[in-house]
Length: 229
Image (cartoon, rainbow, N blue to C red; front, side, top):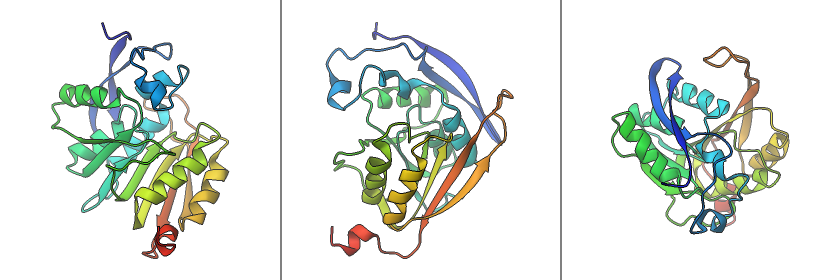
């Protein structure tokens, strides 16, 4: 027994085929026998969050069904169950999924098998720490990634480190309170913002309220590069 319980779900994707998803049974699951999650900075309270189906992640997956990805390298940050990555992957996009949770990769491998998809690139992406194996990308995407006070600064720094000089970032945010701080940090890194209010309901008819945050840096030189970092 792995120490936690799972369930199988069928997730609809707007304009595309549904995905079979193996997720944690609920938010009460926890198992860290070797301390890998603790070493990654993951508390018992936040341990099960990676394995849940979050509305913003479903909205991001919907968006990636039609987003122009040809010729782009794509990184999903805080991917959790990696719905958006799987959508990009089955569209033959060059995508890398990333997260800091020690079980994310194994759940991703299981879900790829459930959907008859080939292997998908995965790298550890721990905000606020060095991620030496992770390169730079043209498009960085994430769903509901601003849920703790320290996330705006850590995530903006992570993005600055792993975005190409000319890059786009898309964040689906369910009106979290840390969005303004994140916007300021992104602006300091040369990213201009366009916000779009999302009002379309979820596939099951339940309400969704949030914003699509679309950041773009077009000048070809990031502040970190200009400083010689």
